[in-house]
Length: 101
Image 1 (tube, rainbow, N blue to C red):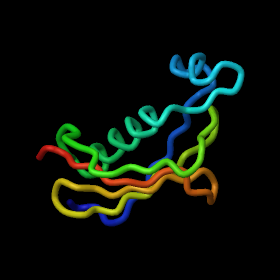
Image 2 (image 1 turned 180 degrees about the horizontal axis):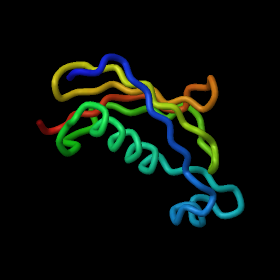
Image 3 (image 1 turned 60 degrees about the vertical axis):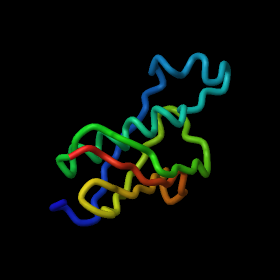
């Protein structure tokens, strides 16, 4: 991996198709949507192949539609990337992903 600790930012808009059912009247961004954004950003940042596994993931706080999520990456080795997601200064998710070469 060529990039040192890196960061990316994304926002899940209020009209995202996953939100009406998660949860009606009080939408929360599903964890799988957060993880998809993290995997996409990690692949783009480090030139990695497809996601192969998720050795660990922890969701610490909900993310609401329209909130900016900052992803901080911490490369572990050639095919593993640690991540932490923040809304403002609040930690919302952490974990590690494994990718194909």
